[in-house]
Length: 148
Image 1: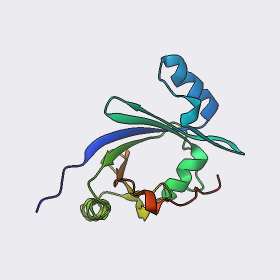
Image 2: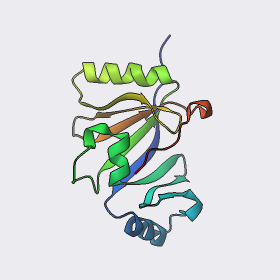
Image 3: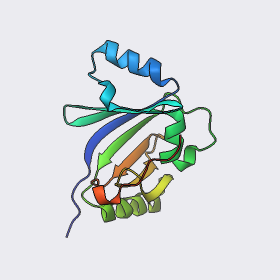
Image 4: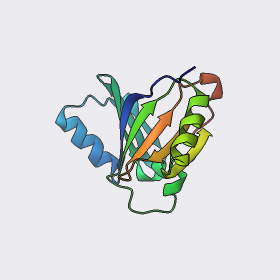
């Protein structure tokens, strides 16, 4: 049985200044309601909106270092972009990550059960662009978000 083809699902922008990024994209005309912004005591760390068939997501550099462990301790994350693909199952995340890394592509974030309820991994394409692989979200697998 062949695996379902991954589907382009999102573009994730890593922001060095979340408030400036939110203001810019809102001024551009993107409908980013405040209800779609995740804030903690340390500020805004995630915003998302569905545009057509894909999500536009903006994450703080501090938050990005949590969901991409390869980026922990780095100070140059602002302006990075992650292209996201949805896959059919949690097992497919693991299979694709193994296949792509076996073919020589750098694995940035090995598959893990992310706090938002999906299985998630990141590999680099040949030009070094991070590509996220995400399973459907399972509400029963959600856990509290980490401190940011």
